[in-house]
Image (cartoon, rainbow, N blue to C red):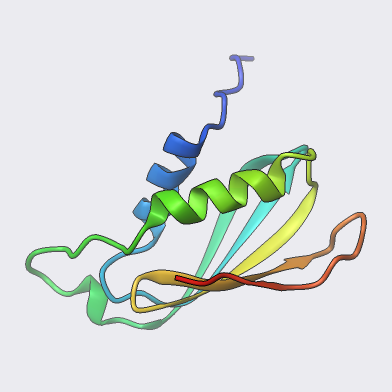
Length: 108
Protein backbone atom coordinates (compact mmCIF):
# COMPACT_ATOMS: atom_id res chain seq x y z
CA UNK A 1 0.00 0.00 0.00
CA UNK A 2 1.51 3.33 -1.12
CA UNK A 3 1.65 6.51 0.88
CA UNK A 4 -1.36 8.78 0.51
CA UNK A 5 -0.59 11.94 -1.51
CA UNK A 6 -0.78 15.07 0.61
CA UNK A 7 -3.66 17.32 -0.39
CA UNK A 8 -2.67 20.98 -0.80
CA UNK A 9 -4.42 24.08 -2.12
CA UNK A 10 -2.36 23.74 -5.31
CA UNK A 11 -3.15 20.12 -6.13
CA UNK A 12 -6.79 20.46 -5.05
CA UNK A 13 -7.05 23.50 -7.38
CA UNK A 14 -5.46 21.46 -10.16
CA UNK A 15 -7.94 18.61 -9.62
CA UNK A 16 -10.88 21.04 -9.55
CA UNK A 17 -9.65 22.71 -12.75
CA UNK A 18 -9.56 19.25 -14.34
CA UNK A 19 -13.25 18.80 -13.52
CA UNK A 20 -14.36 22.33 -14.44
CA UNK A 21 -13.87 23.72 -17.94
CA UNK A 22 -14.70 26.95 -19.78
CA UNK A 23 -18.50 26.89 -19.75
CA UNK A 24 -19.24 24.08 -17.26
CA UNK A 25 -22.77 24.23 -15.84
CA UNK A 26 -23.93 21.59 -13.40
CA UNK A 27 -23.04 20.09 -10.05
CA UNK A 28 -19.94 18.40 -8.73
CA UNK A 29 -20.39 16.25 -5.68
CA UNK A 30 -17.23 15.46 -3.80
CA UNK A 31 -16.72 12.92 -1.05
CA UNK A 32 -14.19 13.65 1.67
CA UNK A 33 -12.71 11.44 4.35
CA UNK A 34 -10.88 13.06 7.24
CA UNK A 35 -10.46 16.28 5.25
CA UNK A 36 -9.19 14.62 2.05
CA UNK A 37 -11.16 14.60 -1.22
CA UNK A 38 -11.41 10.96 -2.27
CA UNK A 39 -14.01 11.05 -5.08
CA UNK A 40 -15.66 13.49 -7.54
CA UNK A 41 -19.09 12.84 -9.10
CA UNK A 42 -19.93 15.16 -12.00
CA UNK A 43 -23.40 16.00 -13.31
CA UNK A 44 -22.93 18.35 -16.25
CA UNK A 45 -26.11 19.95 -17.59
CA UNK A 46 -24.57 22.10 -20.32
CA UNK A 47 -22.28 20.47 -22.87
CA UNK A 48 -20.83 23.36 -24.86
CA UNK A 49 -17.65 23.40 -22.79
CA UNK A 50 -16.70 20.02 -24.26
CA UNK A 51 -16.64 21.06 -27.92
CA UNK A 52 -13.53 20.61 -30.07
CA UNK A 53 -11.24 23.60 -30.13
CA UNK A 54 -9.42 25.66 -27.55
CA UNK A 55 -10.45 24.73 -24.02
CA UNK A 56 -11.13 27.82 -21.96
CA UNK A 57 -9.71 27.86 -18.48
CA UNK A 58 -12.21 27.64 -15.61
CA UNK A 59 -12.55 30.77 -13.51
CA UNK A 60 -10.49 30.87 -10.30
CA UNK A 61 -10.17 27.16 -9.38
CA UNK A 62 -7.33 28.07 -6.99
CA UNK A 63 -9.56 30.42 -4.97
CA UNK A 64 -12.31 27.83 -4.71
CA UNK A 65 -9.69 25.25 -3.73
CA UNK A 66 -8.51 27.52 -0.90
CA UNK A 67 -12.11 27.81 0.35
CA UNK A 68 -12.61 24.05 0.09
CA UNK A 69 -9.33 23.45 1.90
CA UNK A 70 -10.50 25.72 4.72
CA UNK A 71 -13.80 23.80 4.86
CA UNK A 72 -11.96 20.46 4.92
CA UNK A 73 -9.34 21.62 7.47
CA UNK A 74 -11.23 20.23 10.47
CA UNK A 75 -10.93 16.70 9.03
CA UNK A 76 -14.39 16.97 7.44
CA UNK A 77 -15.94 13.63 6.52
CA UNK A 78 -18.99 13.64 4.28
CA UNK A 79 -20.17 14.96 0.93
CA UNK A 80 -20.13 18.48 -0.49
CA UNK A 81 -22.12 19.51 -3.57
CA UNK A 82 -20.62 22.32 -5.66
CA UNK A 83 -23.08 24.27 -7.82
CA UNK A 84 -21.34 25.60 -10.93
CA UNK A 85 -22.15 27.88 -13.80
CA UNK A 86 -20.03 29.34 -16.57
CA UNK A 87 -16.95 27.43 -15.38
CA UNK A 88 -17.10 28.75 -11.81
CA UNK A 89 -18.30 27.45 -8.45
CA UNK A 90 -21.10 29.76 -7.31
CA UNK A 91 -22.05 28.05 -4.04
CA UNK A 92 -21.67 24.82 -2.16
CA UNK A 93 -23.70 22.81 0.31
CA UNK A 94 -22.53 20.20 2.80
CA UNK A 95 -24.35 16.88 2.60
CA UNK A 96 -24.13 13.92 5.00
CA UNK A 97 -21.87 15.70 7.43
CA UNK A 98 -21.12 14.81 11.00
CA UNK A 99 -22.19 18.22 12.27
CA UNK A 100 -25.12 18.93 9.90
CA UNK A 101 -24.20 22.48 8.83
CA UNK A 102 -26.02 24.04 5.88
CA UNK A 103 -24.98 25.58 2.55
CA UNK A 104 -22.74 28.60 2.20
CA UNK A 105 -22.77 31.08 -0.65
CA UNK A 106 -19.46 31.80 -2.41
CA UNK A 107 -19.01 35.20 -4.00
CA UNK A 108 -16.83 36.02 -6.97
